[in-house]
Amino acid sequence: MKKSHIASLQFVVNSCFVKMFNIRSKVVVEECQRYFNFDSVSDIIAKRTHKFLTSFDNSDSLLRSVHGLGYFVS
Image (cartoon, rainbow, N blue to C red):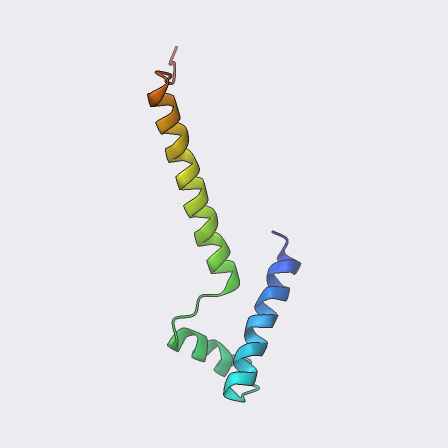
């Protein structure tokens, strides 16, 4: 995902916190997000990407083992 897309999504999240808590300070918004254990958009994307790639790697390994395929080392 492009950095500009991530920044746009984070802006939406920050705007929600601004409206919910009637605050304007970016520092206070970030503190509220930490207090409520709300990850940043970039952290969420990184976690989901890692989870997908791990799952993909595991399914690929499972597929190779089911079909008797393996890595051939020369």
